Image (cartoon, rainbow, N blue to C red; front, side, top):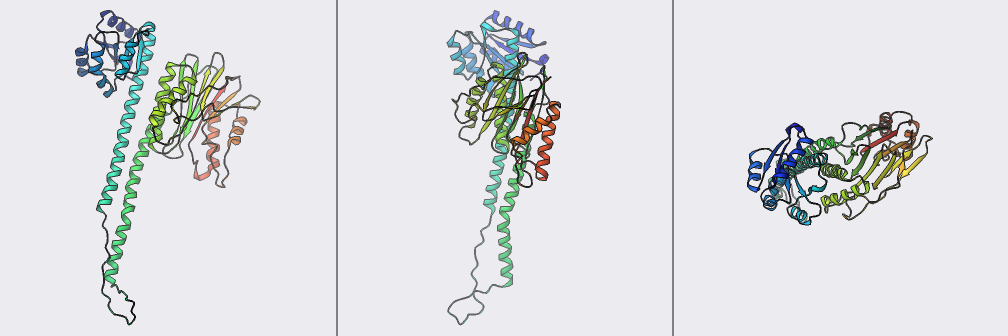
Length: 453
């Protein structure tokens, strides 16, 4: 997102008082924003063409709203400029007008305040930036696949078919069964052609391997950007996490989602598959969760809505996404969670374990699925919360033994008096040593939350 001092906002309304009020709120919410007024569609289009605009706010109750949407909606979408509609909550015609032009982000006149305007605008700009990144990644993926297809077609087109050469027998045998004698020169020629024909698939595989390496490099960069740069600060808790890919890329993900001053939601999940596709899918899911968590503090509502959005993205592809949301309230010490196919564990000060089971099916199967919340828990001083994908449990030793859940829990119990970051480090080291030189066969993602004593 642009820095507050460089924010440029286009405000469109044919009502002078509305433009003045929005300009005042923007100046109260941001430091020295550039606010551009437009009273109609022509002025709005000229402003968009003349300079860089970070966000557009359109008064849906304005008499020019429909003409403005007809003239700029497509451009703002193409240029990834967030468009927010200021509407009256009790006027369904204004919402219908926005939905008819693909508008998904709203401000409501009755509850508008500088702080809410700032939060909505920051969320809209972040979504637009993420969508731009996803579009660029999609174009790069399309380019790589096109190059791969062209290489395969070129190899097929250039391949030579070697026809057998009929050879007269040097000596006719007495037997009625004819034989064929091939000279050394002919043998050499045939062998060379056969070797050339056999080497063509090898060259194609080499080119495909190069394309795959490019895919992996791109996916690795995207996946690195998905992971949080550090641990969040939440009063009364220590939090640490890590994610290790079994290959250059993986489908695991975790994130920290602040919902309010005293609320933090931790997300952890994995997507089936390898390469760039699951990474792009998880980056979309990350963007959805970040926006949805700003709108609602209900983890069930957030996860169910994310399921609807990600199911539309998956379409007919065969991807399976498991995801767990855990919300921690630092004031009440309550722990609320909702899970689509993953379980978590609470280990208390005495070493006893409480399982937080999955509350619903994995994401992406049916868009109408509602994922209910689990039973509310409490993290008491000394309690530990262990969040993990199944990669750690699936680590296999050189002798074929599996690491397993109990081994994982035992390591946490034995080290529960250590800081959260050290417990995560011990788990990582234990998995690596158990796997030996072969390394883990699946991605490993672990998050530890420790309630301070």
